[in-house]
Length: 103
Image 1 (tube, rainbow, N blue to C red):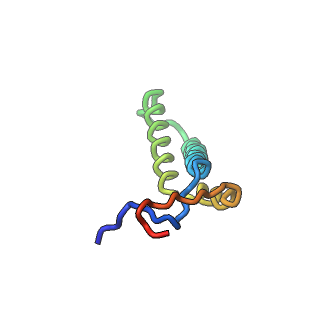
Image 2: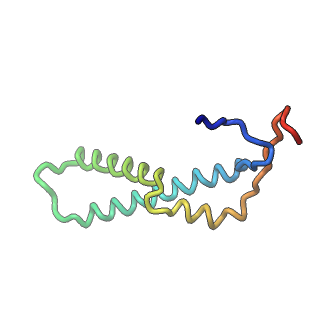
Image 3: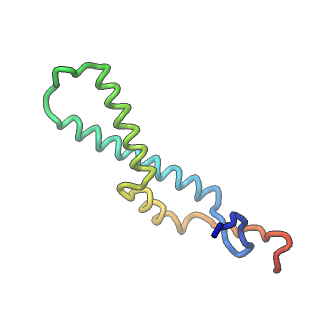
């Protein structure tokens, strides 16, 4: 069974403001996760034998990528909570009726 991507005239679509809010909420969650991972890494203790500025830079890039991936998947749910909080403030525009469909 294949689901068609054609929308019916009755379903509302997300406004550009809501799409922007979703993007910003995920970015906020990623920033929060980066800070959290960085703080956890700092509390790890002393330096190892292979620690250098190059490995630290690579580790920071890896941590940032991990945080971005976790935020995209909604690991902590911060973005979801922000969206729920601001959902009532974003307008929803009705979709235009599909030509040829009964109205």
